[in-house]
Image (cartoon, rainbow, N blue to C red; front, side, top):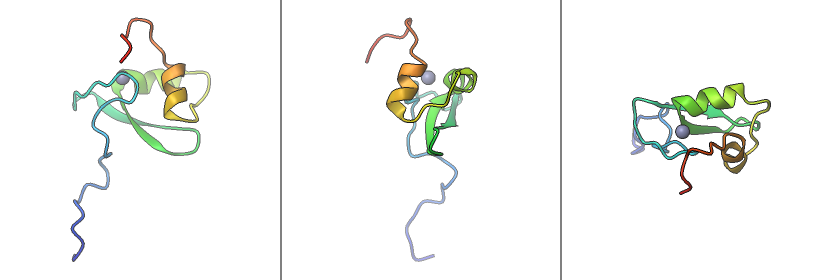
Length: 74
Ligand SMILES: [Zn+2]
């Protein structure tokens, strides 16, 4: 109990979708990369990743995989 860690082990450090940057907490979820790393995504990108033909190996690949032409860049 001496450690000052916040008791938030289940909450990801990131608070916005790594793909589209959405920071609406109600829609945020996590998805798992091929190496087991968890990343924060919004609900629609979680589904999109699940439907993707393969798992992304990195956040960059996740972005490419789920690239949505309607989403403005940066
Ligand atoms: Zn998103």
